[in-house]
Image 1 (cartoon, rainbow, N blue to C red):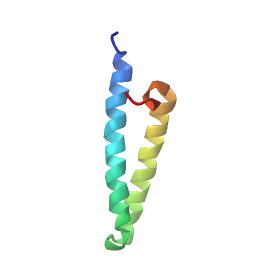
Image 2 (tube, rainbow, N blue to C red):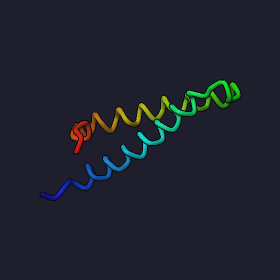
Image 3 (cartoon, one colour):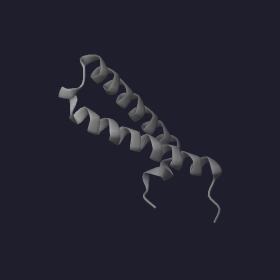
Image 4 (cartoon, rainbow, N blue to C red):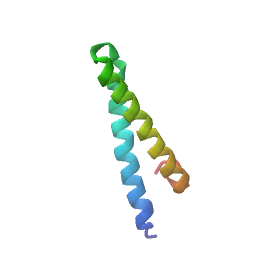
Length: 67
């Protein structure tokens, strides 16, 4: 069965977003090493990433299942 190209692209993008979110989570785990401005920027980026992830999952519920 051929996968819908939009769904395939959503899966790839979701993986990229999740990888970046994981990297930010790790970075924020060492927040004491960041300047307050850098920390605020990282927190804002993490929130934005989560919004994008949530939107993709709502638009493509199939992405909630693991392959």
